[in-house]
Figure 1 (cartoon, rainbow, N blue to C red):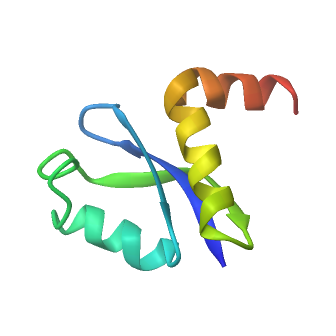
Figure 2: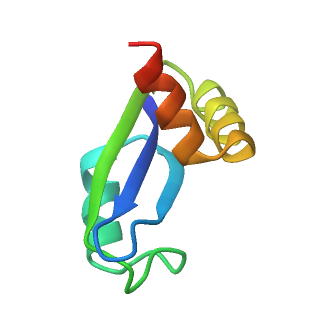
Length: 81
C-alpha cells in the first residue's frame, strides 16, 4: 500500500508533498533530517494522507497537488467537507 502525503513545518509553516510505502517511517526520517529537501526545517507534522493500492496512483496525486499547491489543495479539501 502506498500513500500520498502532505506535511507542514511547525517552524516555517511551509509544506512538503510526497509519496511513500511507509508513512510512519517517512515522517520519522523527515523529522530526523534525513531528507535534503526538508532538512533543518522541522519539526514536521502530518496534514494529509491518502492511501492507494499502487505507487503510480500515489505519484499521480502527488504531482496534482504539487501543481495546485499544498495550501490551496488543503483549503479546497476543507471546503468540500
